[in-house]
Length: 88
Image 1 (cartoon, helix red, strand yellow):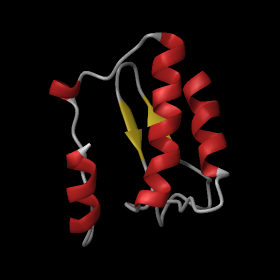
Image 2: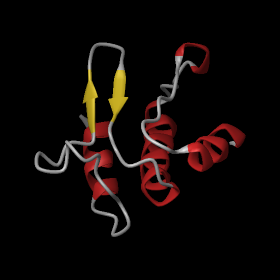
Image 3: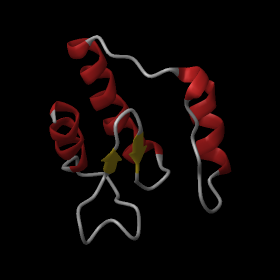
């Protein structure tokens, strides 16, 4: 629930852009037992507040994403954003 609140705050950031099909519902993510799916535009100005929120959650909870089991999936032409995200 804490992560959901952090993502909701991140979506209030002025430059945040929802995924095309999620804007009506103000949906930024879905959480299952041990899975997290994030929906947003693949733009640095949208990704940064979500990454910051996830980092805050990690720092507060001590829970960390298993990068070996994690993946990022981009739709459309997001080659520039993909390159930026893989550099970090």
